Length: 418
Image 1 (cartoon, rainbow, N blue to C red):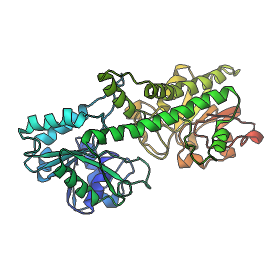
Image 2 (tube, rainbow, N blue to C red; image 1 turned 180 degrees about the vertical axis):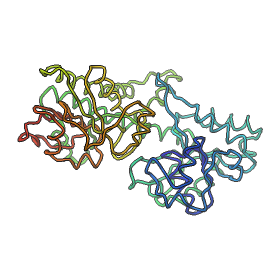
Image 3 (cartoon, rainbow, N blue to C red; image 1 turned 120 degrees about the vertical axis):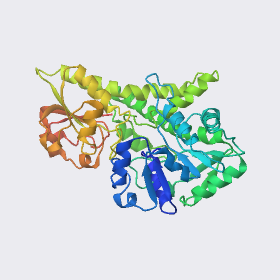
Image 4 (cartoon, one colour; image 1 turned 90 degrees about the vertical axis):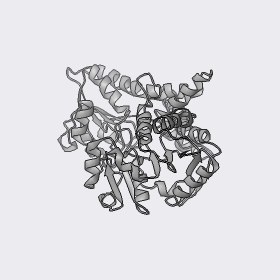
């Protein structure tokens, strides 16, 4: 198993329950932590990590013992939103250095259609001096891990698999069927499986973009978006999406992989990029709403409190979190900010962003309270808890629609929702 993050580690644990496995990662601290039963992502329990079937290692020579290699490394985008395949290329080179006859390599990382066959396989062949189909085989099986979701796990999600030939397809399907109880779907080709994965998140991105745009419209019409959605959801085929920030390493990234490949083939995507534009705009829209209100207050030193910095609730992952954009915008407007998040490590937040967190019990009252991420601890706050966090006449910006309309009227708190 190459790559022991949110995707790779749960897959490794699932296989460790039926066979011996080797978990490889280039991050030495990650290997050290996992070896003593510590998963900073809170996805896997300590008792599952302390297992005689598992060898955690950052020594590439150790994976020579394996004959079935799963690659689950990140596939981010550059500052220009172009695919960054460096982790995938590096992982392919490392596996190639120990690849032997009879091995199967399966990629799970999200990519655009063609990456496995056009980029990864040539690296495996060149660096190993082995030949695909003669000496080794390659499959692609898109990951469907949902960080923070302990209900939809790898064992109970249908697994899509593909292979470089029919024999490989059946071998990959057979191996995954040992840990997946809900069924295996055999994709027609590797490119089909790659495309299926990338459109899953693209579709979700576009649907959220539609609801975000409706929220922008309804705000101007003085209509409560959540009430509109509640009414519309009574129709049997209405899709239940909510407005909000779209960050993370999947929905906010994967569509750019597809649009990149589309452009290479001469088609400029319209709907996909329009959705991306709307969703990327939401953090700036929210920031502007807050700044406009602050500017209208007769105070010299305005202040704001941000609850939550991760990209989603009850998950410590901060990658591509749009809350960070809001924080940057408010700081640029000379607004004093305090930030609290009980899910993430304060030390890691400082190291990666320079942001210092404050425990919720130590927060001081501010003019604006932004409920940015709906962690369970924040959803347990009631109107009186919120009032303690605000100065007189303060406002709560409820980005996750945690509270119903008119919930704060008696407490004289302004309630802004998407």
